[in-house]
Amino acid sequence: MRVTSLLVKESTHKALFGIEKKPSKMEDDEWNDIDFRAKASIILYQSDEVFYNVMNEKTTASLWCRLDLFMTKSLSNKLFLKKKLYSLQMKEGTSILQYLNAFNKILSDLLALKVKLEEEDKALLLLSSLLSSYNHLATTIMYGNDTLELEDVRQMLLNNELMKKRDTMEEASGLFVKVQREDQRVGDPKGIQRFLAVSLTTFTRNQGTSRKIV
Image 1 (cartoon, rainbow, N blue to C red):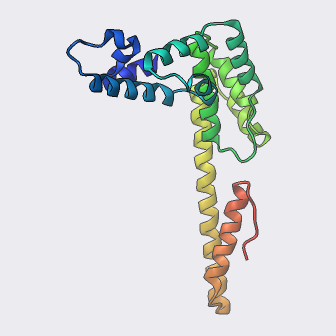
Image 2 (cartoon, rainbow, N blue to C red; image 1 turned 45 degrees about the horizontal axis):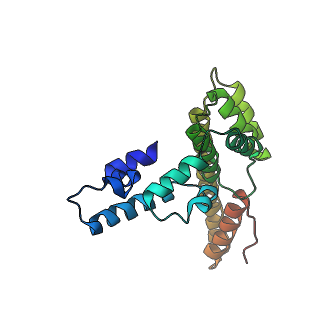
Image 3 (cartoon, one colour; image 1 turned 90 degrees about the vertical axis):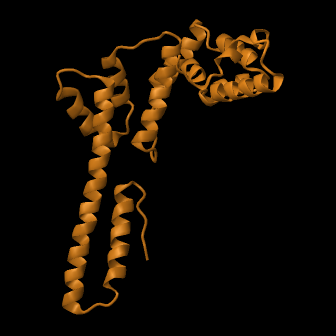
């Protein structure tokens, strides 16, 4: 588990076993500091749902035991996370990076419960949960490759996002040249203001938040 690796790296992993395992030569203040840092590191790795169930634990050892109970390999937990994964849908206004992080978080929680999904299934679940504006790209990804793996799909989606931003900048650059030439023709001293207004309106429209700039 990644969190235990982190505690080992921070030299705070001994706190997992409780104060009974405190070295006899270690001062209480030093132990309390190790325990506090270990508990903080563990909490930072938990989702909100998990955090609210363990937030009242006072020591690292009690927190770890509580997490073990909460994240037990029970059918109910597995079903809850599977349902969460299968019903997950991207919402308007959510960036692709934010959505990928949310998707991967559920997969990580399932993996902690020893639930493994095939790469192809994970990729298909991701593609089918995207907004309708991604339909053409999703179809291209699904039928344009011999194999389908989550990491490949994730990279294609991020590359597509970068390309859209680049196209927006190129469009804005083209507008600048067009407005500049028109201003030179008619001698408009406020041309740059009109360019900024048009460019910002175009940019926000392409980002799905179109608004009129006056």
